Amino acid sequence: MKTIKMSLVAALAAAAATTGASANMLEEIISNPQLDIEIRPRYEYVDQDGIDDQASALTVRTAIGVKMGLFGVEGLNGQIQGMDVSNFGLVTDYAPEDAGYPVVMDPTQSRITQANISYTYEGFTGIVGRKMVVLDNARFIGNVGWRQMPQTYDLAAAVYNWEGLNLLAAYVSRVNRITENGKLDTNTVLLHATYTFMPELTVTGYDYMVSNLMDHIGIRATGKFDLSDIALKYEAEYAYQKDPTMDDDEEPFGDDATQDLVKDNDASYYKLGLEGTMSGFTLGAAYELLGKADGSDNDKGLPFTTPLATLHAMNGWADKFLATPAQGLEDMSFKLGYNFGEYGKIVGIYHIFSSEDDIPSYNSDDLGDEIDVAYNYKITKDLGLLLKGAWYSAGDVESYTDTDKYWVQLDYKFHSEL
Image 1: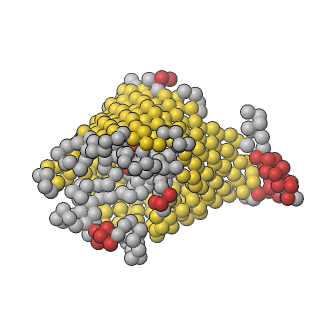
Image 2: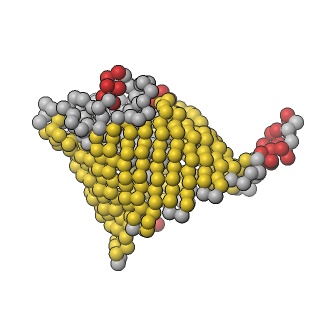
Image 3: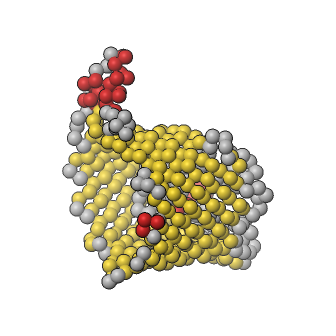
């Protein structure tokens, strides 16, 4: 461990000595470096009706990152992180690695996931570069952290914190999505404000102007209460989707047909949720609506769509509704969990899916149901185990087929002050 904790500055100086560089110069550039390493192997299995073969994928995420002070200036910091996703050719029976199998969206790839400079002074922070971003519960803006390669943002952002107030404004020039060919050049603007009045009430307002696609303007309220032996928390949210403010006639999200839909995409979003915890048990219920396009005749306009979200966490882990059906999506869910203390945590969620309007040709709004179960166990301080499953049962709409998914994952994280 002493070897691992050797001074990064000293190591860089030794390497630079061959070129005549000065150790003192390096020390003036870099200070207080911190090393973060993550190794996350995962096995995923998918059995999907309509595809003869089952998918099996064994992938490993390896991430190495360094944070450091820069030039001896208080508040000036840098961050760089590289990430690799590999399957080592061992278990590769999955699309897109091999055609004919269900999709496991963890293709092999490597990239710089974070590279940014930030400056903090008296509650203000400015950031320029590549950064992972998660706002609120990641329903609108997320890092897609479940997939082995996350989503990151090339941006310039300003953040201000004062007592219970948090303000964020960001200009995003590119979204680096989870696949190599998923880079999205954009002129997106993110505005976000949160104020905590009391533990029982935090209010958030936002306007996410996604270039050439839509604006999302919304308000969100969250809070928690302690009632005797029961801890309650709630969330309530409304958002409205309208035609894009940032419109430069580019087509980053698809073909001409998609862009025609963008011109008529007004839609609404609602979320209500309540859960309580007592004696290790957690019970909860939530209702979420991603509405169809207002005034839509079922073939025009985009339904409420959140293209920059961490979608896996939202409407079932089987990922059947990464795209909102044209007639909208209603998700009624119920949660039951238990905390075993040192023996881990288990949670189960039951979803009932339906569309806002009947699906044409099926005369039904039944989109099926799903059971999700996850068990987390901390093996050591740095190593965690996740066992997870999702079982989706189709409703009346044939395009959504029965799907079972299973995961076994280890996650090792190491942090060191160098």
